[in-house]
Image 1 (cartoon, rainbow, N blue to C red):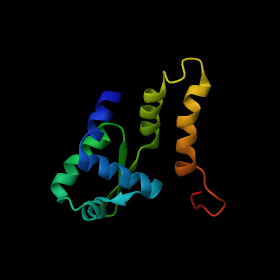
Image 2 (cartoon, helix red, strand yellow):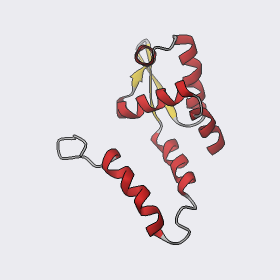
Image 3 (cartoon, rainbow, N blue to C red):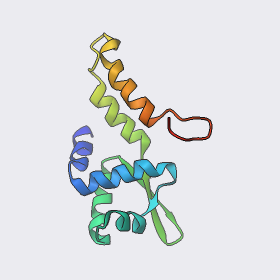
Image 4 (cartoon, rainbow, N blue to C red):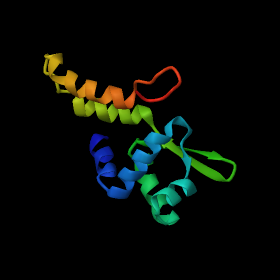
Amino acid sequence: MAVQSLGALAQESRLEAFRLLVRSGDEGLAAGEIARALEIPHNTLSSHLSILVNAGLLKSRRESRSIIYSVDFDGTRKLLSFLMEDCCQGNPEVCMPVLESLLPGCCDTTSNGAKL
């Protein structure tokens, strides 16, 4: 699955769509909004999003007439875990700089939800 996920992200438009959806959080975005934001034709975007869904990086849901895409955080965590699996080789201090560099920009928030 890691090879499929990495292959899906290896294309520029798919990587841009994935990053846009990471920023959108759990709510996700409608396919049309993604197409407009990335200036990608709808049929081309549909193909890209399908590849990301099949790779376990995105999920979709129907809301009325729209399909909403969002990041599959479980699939994304699995990919990140796979990439970091052998990082520290029994020495956690080796991986700590990588993990610390991710947390301030990624996961730490203040009480009002703003990023630190």
